[in-house]
Length: 291
Ligand SMILES: Nc1nc2c(ncn2[C@@H]2O[C@H](COP(=O)(O)OP(=O)(O)OP(=O)(O)O)[C@@H](O)[C@H]2O)c(=O)[nH]1
Ligand SMILES: [Mg+2]
Image (cartoon, rainbow, N blue to C red):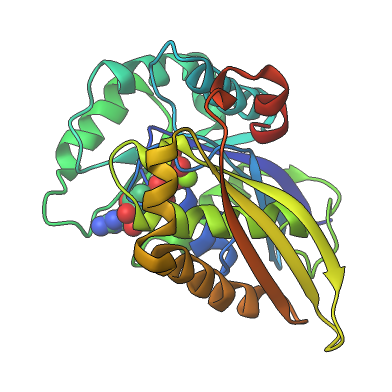
């Protein structure tokens, strides 16, 4: 009988969790950026092999902060941890493990048998693998450890082998042709958010969310979809629009490229920018964005 398992991918912000999920799935399932706190949801990606099925759950980076949004993000990660059969703990070998890393690792106490530590970014110039191995050995004793580069796709076969060694016999949770369960409205919003994050800096990536407005069928058999890029302040609106609309044009065009790859029908994207000064304090809004 085939095996299956739910596998949570957890780690600090920017440790490479989403990059890892995409590399495992061989597709862009979860958005990636150099900015911490990019992932805001428990995004599922599915890997089917001869041995069975692994359902991965990407999670927001574990970040110590008392801000309302960050607490919610942390709760998404902790929820996924609790639900998972196996945990891949992504440890960034380029970063000094500090109080945040220790606080995250403390969640694994007693669950070491369910954990595989993936020491990531081993390709990077500033990678310090011995430091990461030492931390893993002392803070998650007994857990299996693999060295990977999610970016270069190195060590992933070894990781998958370790995962199937831990997985138990079980049903296929998704049809074999699925690699994610995200609905199209969310998926498009995430792609727009990725492009917007990657073209803005400082506080702006954290200030924005993407809001679906409407959609309609088009004569070419496709869909026209309309989204708002929502920011917190009027000044940020100007930045996202750019001089003569140049920035929003780039965001739209880059999004269109990804959408053409993901959908087998044409998507015509319309983008507007809106200001919502208090969305981070709006519980209903947060409910709809962080899950
Ligand atoms: N050199 C190197 N860079 C990596 C590797 N994996 C991820 N990165 C980079 O690290 C940055 C963060 O990657 P993400 O995959 O978005 O990290 P994350 O853990 O999902 O981040 P959050 O969602 O914010 O928690 C990006 O710039 C990636 O290109 C790796 O193996 N090697
Ligand atoms: Mg991520």
